[in-house]
Length: 139
Image (cartoon, rainbow, N blue to C red; front, side):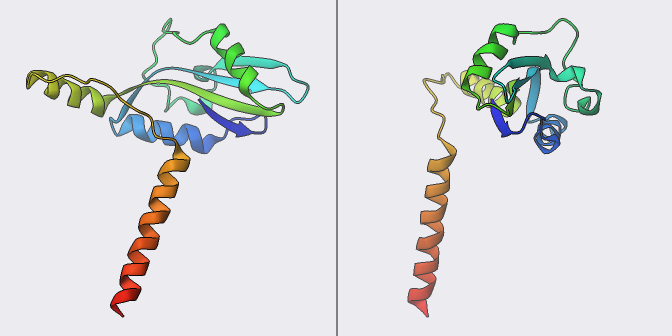
């Protein structure tokens, strides 16, 4: 789920999803736009209902709706009043290909961990600082 300030979905987020879809990196299975109004009322709608985002939702066929009203209600509870979110159910195509190759080699995926953005940002900053310090030490 991608959360945004304001009650309108940010087009740049949907454009990024469309680019990943066109590049064959993800397959969009379903999506919901969830809004938590300033008065605290939650609502949800399918992304396919927004004509301007048709490029992102081109793969979603009629009647394919694993995400439903209960998912929208649960998501709305996590949002701040006056904000919105884009819920995406995607298949990571690259991971599917890798998993198939691993299984063909007799292996299996035994676990996965999602690393929070903040941790990745801290690691990048620490790496950058180390590179700068090393370069400064050579001068």
